[in-house]
Length: 201
Image (cartoon, rainbow, N blue to C red):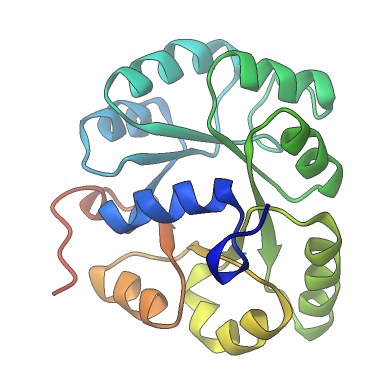
């Protein structure tokens, strides 16, 4: 069901959390996972790891009031199919990131929030990616590299309902402010200093 701005109810939950803190912690190592549990960022994007780490990490993250988003294409040991998505749902994952439309469909069927990645490689890649995402209908779109989001924001807002996340090469508070001003609701960053005490004033 679409709500204000054409956003789904699931997307509005991410929007709510982004208003609390505008950066999601992008996690690529066990050290990242440990630090993120202590950080201010309520959204944790797990971009690497394996199935054995997931359940205890999700349990601890939820105990601390955080939401876990898993990049299902990149985490090892998780089937890239309906069964894999069902497992993620069972252990308490809140959302998935994927570039695969079939996984968007499978995750939606399980009641998970869906984030589909859009890679900005060139004009033809942008056009193809937009068509793919428009057909799949994810709850949110993550644009990579996120630092490029302001350059394509007007085009994307014309072609897709959003909301948009800027991911990749977001390294400073100024980067976060710039993509936010261009219309991104959230930045995803592996820069530790952006995970706590961030002020965009």
